[in-house]
Structures are given as C-alpha cells and as structure tokens.
Amino acid sequence: MRRIFFASIGMTVCAVGCGRDFKAIADQHVEQRLFDKHEKREAIRFFEQEKGRFIDVNQTTSVDRDVVLPLLKRLHETVPTEQWAILKSGKTDQALAVLIQLPKDPMAVDRMAELVQQADDNFSGFILQQWGHAWLKINLIDQEAYEFLKKADPDVDKQR
Image (cartoon, rainbow, N blue to C red; front, top):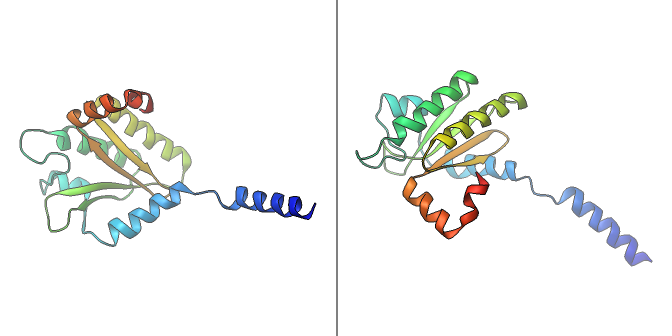
C-alpha cells in the first residue's frame, strides 16, 4: 500500500512539475546560443541599408527582399518590437537567424502568428518558426530543400 501511495505521489509531482516548457527552452537557446555568442544587427536596417543576406547567398535569388524584409516590416507595423539579424561568425553581411521579440499581449502574438503564416503560405519554400515566450526565431528553407523534405516525408505539407 505504501508503495502505491508513494508511486502515485511521484507520478503526480512528475506530471505537474516535470513537463517541459518548450517555449522557455527556445528562449534560452536564443539568449545563450545566439545573443551571447554572435553579433546582431537591427534586422530591417540590415536588409535594407546594409544589404545584408539571410537566405540569398548569391545574386540569383531575392527571398530576403521578397519575403523576409516585407514580413519584418508588416510585423513591425503591427506590433513594434525588437527585430534582430544574428550574424554568422566572422561575417558582417550574412545572418544565420532572424529574431523577433514577442509582446506580452497574447492577442498581439496571435496577430503576428497570422502574418508569419500568410508569408509562409505565399513563399514557395517553408518558414521554420521557433516560438518562445519572449522571442520568435525564423529561418527559411528554399524551394529545392522543401521539395527534398516533401519527398522524404510526404506529410510535411500537413504540418504547415
């Protein structure tokens, strides 16, 4: 009887307190692995004035200008929060991630999510989204990589 009692207490504590807060883990990743280890630039200025690159590694594509920059502008017009281009180590013109600060207001976060989804729907590739409590990290997969993923996992479209 004692064993059952302690086992049920242990399972209850684990169920209540052992759950992973994936949003907190995402924010921790942003703080410890991106902000602490990489330079950052204000994102809109990085893409507009500094001619920075994120997805477009050469002059053959324009995803940064056609998808990323308009999305950042729409998000900023809707909810003006911080937006950062996190630079690749040793590079001043190439980002490895784009971060958007999330507001405290859940309704504003929902509006932001709708804008990101609209941009994703209109993009031939796929916008990867890592939502935290404080930060949204986005990365983009181009059409070629997206097609490869669809071949490897036909259900990838269901996850959009």
